[in-house]
Length: 284
Image 1 (cartoon, rainbow, N blue to C red):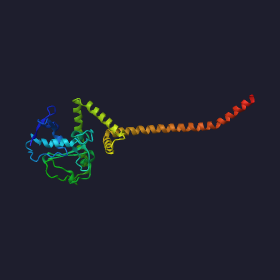
Image 2 (cartoon, one colour):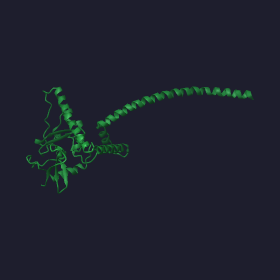
Image 3 (tube, rainbow, N blue to C red):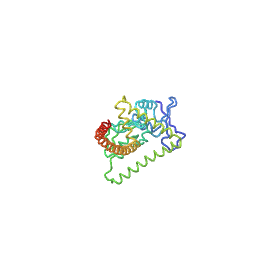
Image 4 (cartoon, rainbow, N blue to C red):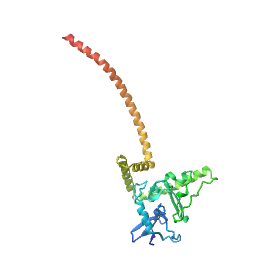
């Protein structure tokens, strides 16, 4: 069975995990290691030797996963090819690996056990109190899925839990901040923000189009509300709405006053007409 061969990106720092790639020259195919390991439908070959990382994935399985991803839309960038799914069974969120990082998804990794899991922000184990069923867990080595046995220790205090969560969030955001700094250094920020504007325009078109399916409409709305930036925009719009409402109420109050004055004036007008008529008769 043909295997993919390990390579490293020449432009990335040598110790960066994201620099590791696997290629198949005959198929003109190249994939990031992490994109494969965290893909929901990809199962690493059982014959893989952990001591030999040079030839790790079989080409046929990689191609099957690529074909599967062509039907899946990313909840972050709204493009196809999203093979990384949330570990919770009934959650339908899918991402590209790097989009998952940008969307604050939580990673759970145990390379020794072949475990590579992704949890969307809504199902992050670090901020949830409930635990997950065995059906939601996978082992990438192709063995029987193991139950998620990690539980909060009864000996941990609330302060320790909070500190651990804050540390985890700090580390996660630090990686994203470093990522964007690298994007800036590489001159990619203009392209990223252009893509964001195009995505927002597409979302607007879908929401304005009466022919958009209910499912697609719901997915678009949910993806917008999952973005903290969108929530900030809504907050600003709400503040502006309150201000506009007060202005309109003041305007209505002034209009009500004018209406009452006009009504009073209307009652006076016939009296003025009678005077004018009487004056005309006298002159004759």
